Image (cartoon, rainbow, N blue to C red; front, side, top):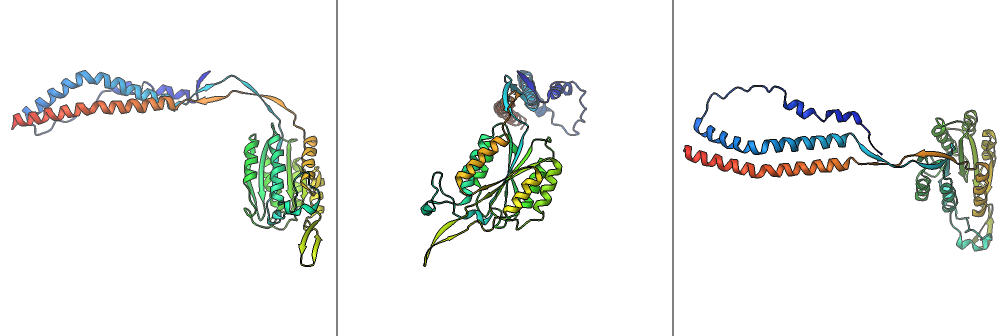
Length: 348
């Protein structure tokens, strides 16, 4: 189906014709004239005008019409299609503070820390698991917040889950500082969800530390979320034990000693959500599946009509005709110049 975005602009099509038939303002004649030269020049111009004026007027009006049609935004609407969607809005808040560079994650299927030389950092593990979670939430609107010293909106709520995943994959340690502003991240997520329908607003916050920066207290943000009906699912991430080689031999230590599990639990309970602990990549994948069961994707049917804008076709044709019109004036100008030169020679 063909339609115009600005149909009323087509009323401007006859404007050049109306202007053409308006009474012209009379010009005063020059005080000094050279009769013989002007007569020859006028005869030449009139002779050429008789054969070209009508063609030029028609071409100019056609260029005007094409420009008006392009401005009216013509578009082609395809057949209506059904798309799956839900009313759920999920904001992902991911910690990218300096501690997320801790290399205590092992590839899936490797559970023993004796393979420490094969470990990779926490952010890479999050990219692998949470990125997959994001792309599988087809039908949900997803947004992405990255936080450290401050919280930054990386992607607003969108059905384009592939782009959300891409933005997550492009994140790097140090983009937002080295501290952990959990409260600010929650506050920003709540702000982005406040205008969305009630009963469908969710926040998934992943962190490996405690709130050490920002202006908003996490529990205050959780209370605000509870009042707005926003559920918060929190994930504490990081291994409980790691073995490092020292001069005195291997030593065990807890790389997640700074993780504030109590605060994350209180945030989740206060808002009606749940807290999860992920010590390995495999546990994070299990949480991913658990969230899918807690927040199932209930698909409804949404009818949309794909549209294709076509303004560039009439606009391109108008530019082409304008170029051709300009080219037609070149021989006319040369003939006029020759006629004027001959007239001046005779007059001289």
